[in-house]
Length: 255
Image (cartoon, rainbow, N blue to C red; front, side, top):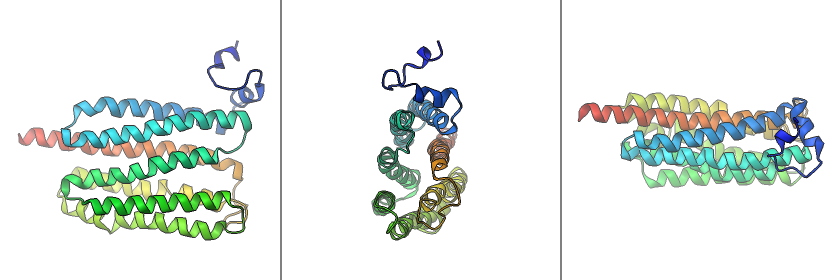
């Protein structure tokens, strides 16, 4: 009866190993399920809430919904891949990040656009995010000989994004906006960027032959990645939503 209730999972017929991982409480398998449902629910929320904010913030919520929606689709396939093989779905994860991380950079631009953000800032953020992801993927898949070098190059892209948020154009626009809601949002986003995103380079450095090799069990990295993805992507969207709601309320009070 239990197995028949789980047949919605697209596993090969008769493959009980996949179901055993769920039934026996495999934490990694469970977080793939939680990540999928949490991302999907968040995407529905952001799409529905677009109608409650000022038109200039609708695109921001649309992008938030796209980020969690794209992640939900990938988590659906990553969940099935892990259940079927027990291996880390590295390729699926990088495809997801290649789409969602640049969109998160777009959110920084959209967040500060009403206060004067330029297209050049967006271009630099996207280039940095692609560099971070492409170099990271090469490092994870090319073997242990050069993964430190690729990791350093990937980290440079990440550090540029951190610079923009703390001291670059994004930070300057936030300081000069005189918007308390934007100021609070940028404070929270700084936490996401420095603490939430830090799990990704740490996970990379735990790989065999890298700087933190042996510190953690490599198989547990998916657990951390799944939790970090859910917190970062959903939390990122909720911060954007809070600014949109606050600025919409402010505009209505002035009118």
